[in-house]
Image (cartoon, rainbow, N blue to C red; front, side):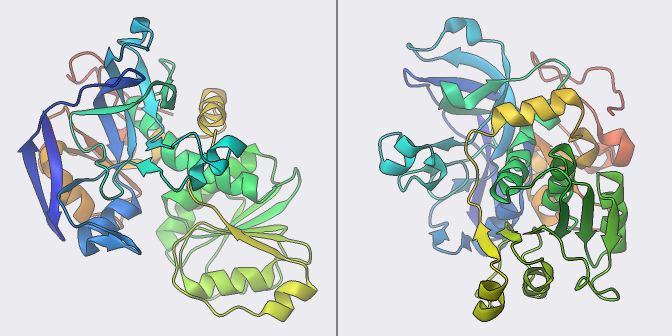
Length: 364
């Protein structure tokens, strides 16, 4: 099979690698769609994220969907041919965290595209059978891949204990912030406020569930007094301002990745503000699929650019550029920059059998 391999900061090459063979409890998946995540970009640019260091060639990409083409001996062979969304992790299933249901905290976790575990910018991947979720025909390959970042949004809103009628403030109008806005509306928030310094991102947020937006450069959030503040920006000023703005008894969830921050412990203590974070997700795929089927969340419309396997370096280099929201790699489809659809033209689904484009259509 072909795989797009990170061999050093800023260097991606397409290599021939052996196609993996599924163990007894695994399935072999032909990859159809992979989203570009900020962590992929960070590994590409810097070769590390915190203590996770790329010290050997690594395949990036963990937001993935595909078609099951082979199964292990313990898996129902009827699964061959299923289109699936991949939960890209393998917990040990035996430690105290796994046994308690918090398998995202498993200290022996193997997660796609986290050194030394290869990810999904390749033609085939393997995953344990129960972490390959069948998707209905009405869910596109791209949307099936983006269930992974949707799961981050669901985990954040769940951790915030968002209640019907709550006001939520979200810092950051990028893909995760926009997804959180949609999830918050689906969970019953009455006022969904997105703060972002970029005017185009604020405009997008309004199209994806926000009831209002704020420019933090020119507008104060001090009087919003949200029940919930979720940071999806990773920007220190946004985090500090959001914690200060939340009402007494409010909840703060940190999703964005920031460095060390000096916080006012007395202010947090006196107001009894709960400050926590999330690390990935647990048991979110069934919820995500229900949200997609109901139409409460739209993932297809987030896609602004598509690339082939040979263009992964271009896909990673352009993340965050003007007009870019979600970039997708299709490992089985040959592309060049001139063929790249954008905006409303980007919602194209590829056939699950041979990788050839179906008739192009606009998705909702």
